[in-house]
Structure formats: structure tokens, C-alpha cells
Amino acid sequence: QVQLGESGGGLVQAGGSLRLSCAASGRTFSMNTMAWFRQAPGKEREFVAGNRWSGGTPAYADSVKGRFTISRDNAKNTMYLQMNSLKPEDTANYYCAAASRRIIGLENSYEYDYWGQGTQVTVAS
Image (cartoon, rainbow, N blue to C red; front, top):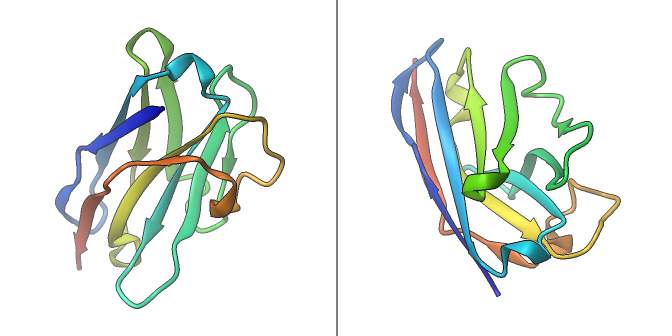
């Protein structure tokens, strides 16, 4: 089992920045792919960014390309999401997710085995 815990959410003005963290514990050696998703009230959960835990080219949703950056610190078993130039439409509960196998469609939430509890990001206009 892998346990995931997000932190770093909060209230920020439009144009501001936040960095989210996702700390993994447990059988972290079994992680292959990790990603960030978000869900706004009344909307479906959507993919934000993802990458292989071992590295590689990250994938981003079109809506966040050029503004968000996903990274990781293997030594700390922690994944990050740096969010710059935030917009009110980025307001959502942000979740980190992990898959224990190599998946092709990083944007497919059903592929992930483990989920965190989420951290709320609110961007004021």
C-alpha cells in the first residue's frame, strides 16, 4: 500500500503562485506513475499533470501548460506542483495520485491505484 498526503493549498490572488506537495509513504518503491488531478465544485475530476516516478517527459493539461510544473524529490518521496500565474478557473480541490504500474494514458483517473485526500486551492479575482 502507498499513502499519499497533499499540502500547500490555500487562498491566493489571481496572478499569484502556490506550490503543492504530495508526500508518499508505505510501499513507495512500487510507484511507477504519479499525477495531479483537480476537481472543482459541480465538475468532474480532471487531469492536471503527471510523470513517471523514475523521470521522463511530464504531461500537462492544455489549460495549465506554461504555468504549472510537476517535479519530484525521490529522496524525500515527495512530488510537487508549482503553480504560477494562477487564474480563478484554477480554483479546485487538488489531488495527487499514484499508479503501481506503467500506464499509457496518464490523464485517465481510473488507472491510478492510490489517492490523497486533496488540498483546496482558491484563486480570488
